[in-house]
Image 1 (cartoon, rainbow, N blue to C red):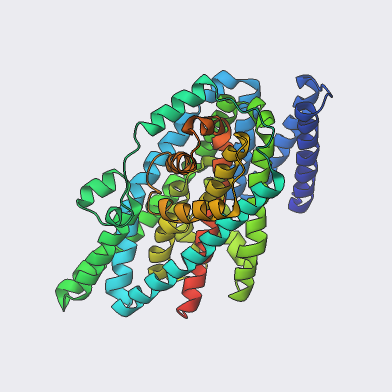
Image 2: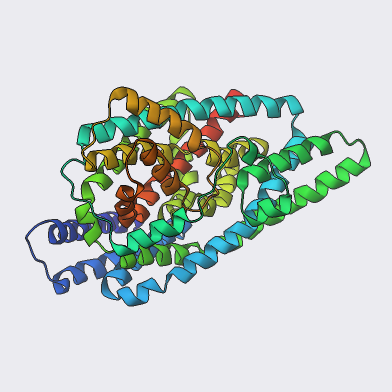
Length: 450
């Protein structure tokens, strides 16, 4: 079986399939389903063949992603019910996160590194996070001001978007950015999946264990190290469900949202993805060059968690596999366990870019011209409000609503964006993951660990 030939055939069929569907959606050319289906079937056969030849989780995920899209197009009623696979996967992942973070951080602090190094990594990480997320905000502002995607857009929220928005707003509570970092009850933090609070508890526990002397300390370190190894094996088992979860998630998104909503908000979606790509090329790639990142190895190691993050639009789903793969890349566990989960609270590059872009978009829809000073003020507000709420369901939308209201715009004007939020979330979550994986390597480089 010539894998290279199959790859080229798969890419060719993907291009033809994408071109035909695009012509059908965005032009007056009406291509019947009977004409589109044969090309899609050939493409699916090709990518399934490639998956069997490669025996790779990434290719399995890609294959299931396209199968999910096809099921949503042909049998939307069936596709709606496939979300159960994604829900099962996310539940299993959530059972892994707390014990995995606890065990890897405690062993990293008490077993291998000195306490001064923990402090250094913390300062370097926060400094890096703030600089990069600020640049992301600026790129988001630049993109929406150039494209002016909101001007002349007649954006009306439908009943389902209003209902969803009201449901998210009903859970809105005041967050104290500093206070919410610290756990009041570790069981509660685990139950609510508050990653940052779990990280803080684990660091303090590790520091406490490091001060214990003799045999008791070593027994505890060995036991917790054993827990870490078990959780990584647990992750490998759960990953067998990942392709089904991805297929179910993408099928549900396409079937529930439909492609019609993309037509009305297409310019916003394109602006976001162009801005995210620009951020990767203009910011992340140069940073990688500065720290002499081995790009080929880096891409190979993050491809699996990246495909999971994109399809499920969940950073949590990708976190355990990302930690495992970065360690395989040669980054020490103590650095990975500290920087990566912390980054998912403080270094949300894709999310911060989206928030600045979406806020100005809503203003443009309302016919409001924001001055440069107002946009800078908005960015300063977003730098504060976007921190430490990664574990809050619908956090991006809640922050967007708060920002829009601070500009004197009715929150209801932002509701229509929820129509394509699932598609935007895929892009911003993927960039969040890439940014945090790179941040982990950067901090490891600064510490002389790679």
